[in-house]
Length: 384
Image (tube, rainbow, N blue to C red):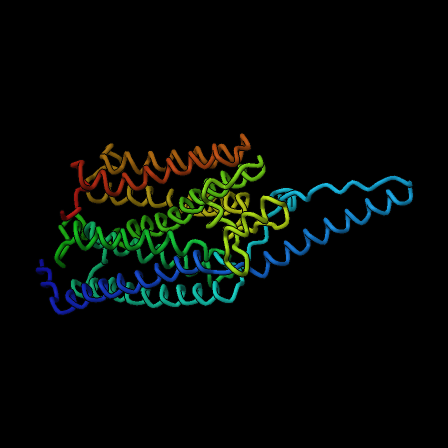
C-alpha cells in the first residue's frame, strides 16, 4: 500500500490567494449590482408600457367624448387608474433584460456587475482547481472545500442561465451577497489546511456522489432565491392591486422616472398619471421559473441519494443505516417531492407552494451545516 503524497503547500497557498482575490472582485460586483438597482433609470420597456397606457386612456377618453357629443350629453372623464396586473392579466409582465431594464445607466452598472462576476468566477474556479491539484484529489473532502466548490457551482449555474439568454440578471444582487457570505464563512470558520482524505473517502464515488450533491444544491439555491423574490414581488403586486402603497418597496420594485425624482413619481402615481414597471419579473414569472428549476434538478438529487447508498454499501456493508446525513438527505427529498406533487396534482401555485419550497431548501442547508457541525455520524468529515 502506497502512502498518500503530502500536500503541495505552494499550490495550497496559491489557492488561498485566488479565493481571497475572488472575494474582493465579488465585492465589487456586489456594489455594481447595488448601483444598478438604486441608480438605474427607468427602462425603455417601462417607458413604452407607460406610453401605451396613456395612449389607451386618451383613446378611451376621446371615445367617451364623441359618444357624449353624439348623444347630446356631457362627457364625464374619470381619473385614469394606475395600471398594474390588469394590463397583462396572467401573462408575464415585460421586464427588460435586467434589474434596471434597458436604461443606459442601469445597463452600464449591470454589464459592469456581470463582467466582474465573470472575473470573480474565474479566480474562484482557479482557487478550487489549485486546491485540488495541491493534494491530487477531488476538492471537496471537508466543509471548507465543499463550501468553496458549492459557491463556484452556484455562480456557474447563474452564468450558464445568462449565456442561455434567460432573464436572470435580477439574481445578481442576491447571488453576490450569498457567495460573499459563503466564502466568508468558509475562510474564517470552516477553513481546513490542504491535506489528504480519510481512508473512508478514498473512492471514485466521491467524484460522483458529492459532485451531484454540489450541482443539485447550486440549482436548488437558484430555485429558493427565485421563490423568495416571488414572495416579495407577489406581496408588492397584491398591495398595488388593492390600492395600497408598496410598503416601502416601490423604490426597488418599480422603475424610477427618467429624472429619478422619486417624490415626483409618487405624486404622479397618486394622480394616476404614470405607470410603475417592475424591476423584477412578474410574480407569476418568478413562480414558474422556481418550479422549473426545482423540477429539473429533482432527478439529480434523487440520483445523489441513490449514489450515496451504493457508496455506503461498498464502504460500510449496508445501503442504508439511518445515519443523520442519510436521514436529512431523505427529508430533503421528501420535502421537494411534496412540493412537486402539490403543484402537479393539487394545483398549488403561489404562496402555499413557495412556503413548501423554502422549507425544502432549509432542510438542504441544515443537512449541510447543521448535521456536519452539530451531529456526529459516519459522515462526520467536516474537518472543523
